[in-house]
Image (cartoon, rainbow, N blue to C red; front, top):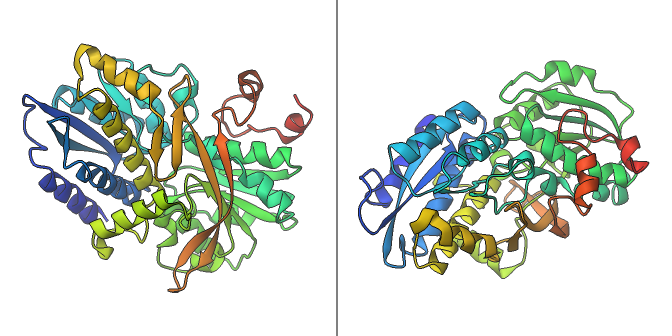
Length: 422
């Protein structure tokens, strides 16, 4: 995997001339801060591909200014992310940073962004709520929905359409795991569902035996808030243990990084409902055009069958940077003031619909409800079964009501209190 990731980075630098050269007049330098080690390495590599894809559409040039890139690999640890971001600014002299990928990285980058007020940071795909909800940085922009938004709509779907009213949850024990679970739980509890028991697994810890042994029998389904190799490890161990309970997928559980994995995981994934920022079979021409663009740009053995969630996030972030730079004719003077203003006002037409930002520079947009199915080629894919439009950062509540829930954690949401209106 590491060799494959390095090959992607090398190819990226080769195809964008000057990526390692010193900054020159008329050039705009963009730093790509992306996880290329750890559980999300495959998704990070797809993020790099999608940055390249977006920049190809403008021939790596905006308003007569050449766009150069520097890839800064991380391992999802916040300290590594900040160190690499500092290198991008201080040594590589980038003008703009696109990234990071993972939840806790985003919170760290929110704080680092405050130390570089003259440089814009556009989130890659990290989804922790706190990144833009708690003391947000005025130069940090997130054009993807956060993890709580991605989880919203799924809970009411499984209650109303599946009648799954008792669930156990297993999720990653870090900021994004809490956030994505929170969105599901708010919607699920409001719809009348009951969360019987919650399990939390540290990111990258591959042994799920203890959790599998404790799973109760009298439940309708298991909510699985894992992604990347963590999800694959659980699914394989769950199958090996002879277990067979219906699954509900967190946003990153039924992504291409999991659906394309080899092994017996597919035997338990079929029929799993999930939610997130896209649906593979979305008939919208903008989505279909993007998928074809992606498929035509890279050989089949060097990409996923369709873009991953991670790739989509970095593509949309790069698209936002392009549109903002076009709006100001490439002007990054005066602490990038005009560029920031353009991003604040941007209504971005993307492959997943129109995206707008709120006062926290956080996206409002569409959540797609999907179910995992077996495709005509025998491989796993997903089909769209519903959608929730204009999902706000406060999940349709007032800011005061949403704030009263508390920040994402192991214990938020309290179903009984939520249903009681407390």
